[in-house]
Length: 557
Image 1 (cartoon, rainbow, N blue to C red):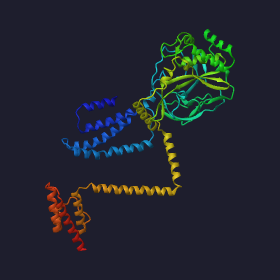
Image 2: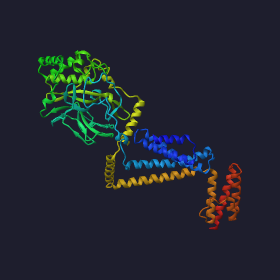
Image 3: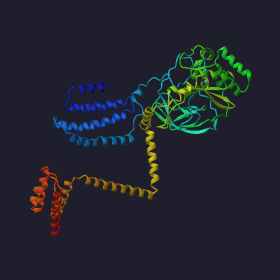
Image 4: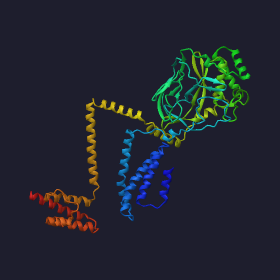
C-alpha cells in the first residue's frame, strides 16, 4: 500500500526527467510486491508490458534529457521504437532462461505467514447433518483432473472415509491394517492438480489403485494423504479401475463398522427391525432399504433443512428434504442397524469437462457424500441421493452442466498457467536435468544421426544467410545499386579497400583525377540532390561511364 501511495503521489505531481525514473522504479517494485500476495495469471501480461514500457521509456527519456522540446515525426518515432524494442525482447528471453534455472516460491509468502481461514463449504473432514438450516453452494475451484471424458455415473472423486459415528456426527478413525484387493474394472489414469490448501487429502478417481508424483501415505481404506499440508499447488497422477470391486482379504473391525449411537429415534429403530425380520440376506436388506427411501418421497434440497436435535428422524419422517449428507448418513445408519458393515465416503461427484484442455473442472459445489457397504466381502458403492424424487432435476443436472466457450478458454489458460508456472518447483528442475541428461546420452551413440542433424542445421543456416543477403540486396533502390556498382569499379581501378562513407562523391572524383569518375559524380549528384527522377536514359549513361572505368582498369592490368 505504501508503494502504491508513493507511486500515486509521483504521478499527480510535477515531473522532470529524474521523476520519470522514480515512476519506473516504483512501478517495478509494486509489480514485484504483488507476487508476494498473488500469483494470478494476469501477472504475466503485466510483467511483459512493464518490461517493454520501462525499457522503451528509458530510451525515450534519454532523448528527453538532451532536448525536452524535441518532437519526433512518425517515421523517426517508428525507427526509434523498433530499435528500442530489442531491449525488452532480450530481457524477456533472459527471464525465460532464469525462470528455468532459478528457484522460486510456489505460493504467496504473505498467505503463508498469514494463512486464510478454511472455507466452511465444500469438502469436509466430517459429516454432521442438521448443523445448518441451509447449505449454499459456492463454485470455487476444488481441483482439475486431466483424463479422457467419462460417463457421468463414473465421476466419483474419493477423498476421505468416515467410519465412526458419534451422536449424529460422522468422523474418521484410521482403521487397523486391513488387506484388500481390487479386481475387475477398466483402468484409467488421471493427472490431478490441486490448489493450495491447509488439508492433507489427495483426491482420486474411485476406485484408486495408487498415485505418484507427491509424497503420500496410502491407508488401508484407500485414503491417500500427503505427508504435509498442501500449502502449494501440486500435481500428481493416479491410477484407478472404474467399475472394480474391493475384495476384503482380512477380517474387519466389526465394532468400528457396525457401531451406532446410544440414543436412536424409535421410528428409525422400527424401520431397521422391520427390514431385518423380512430377510437375512444383506443384498435383499439393501434392496428393501432402497425401496423404503423411494417410498418416502424424499426431496434433494439445500434450504429448510432438518434441525440438529433429531436430524435423521426429521429428515426421514417429517420434513423429508435434505442434501447428500442427510441421505448418506441416514442410509448408512439404517444399514448398520441391519447388521451390514458400512462407512461413508466423502469427496466430489461430477465435473465440467473442458475439451480444450481435456480435463475435468471440479468445484466445491460438487462436494458429495456416499455410502460403501460390505456385502459378500466386497465393498459396494451406494449413492442414496439418487433415490430423491427430484434427483434428475437437481443433483444429477447440476453435475452435468457444460462450460461456455469463453469460460472454457479462460479456464484452459489458467490451467496452463498453473501447470507451467505455479507447479514448477525444485523437483521439476531436477527432473528436467535428468531427462535432458538421458536424452543427451541417447544421442551420443547415434553418431550418424548426429552428423546428419548437424549437416542439416548447417545447410539451414547457410540457406538462411543467403536468403537474408538476397533480401537485403533486393531492398536497395535502383539509385543505391547504381552507386554501389560505381564504388566497386573505382575500388578495383585504383586498388582501394573501400571508400569512406564520409567522403563526398565529387571531391573524391577530383582527387582521383579521372574524367569518367568526375562526369559520373557530377551527373549523379545533380539528379540525386536536384529532386529530378532518374530516367532510363540517365541510368544507361551512368552505367556506360561505369563500364568505361572498368575497361580502363582492365587496360592498366
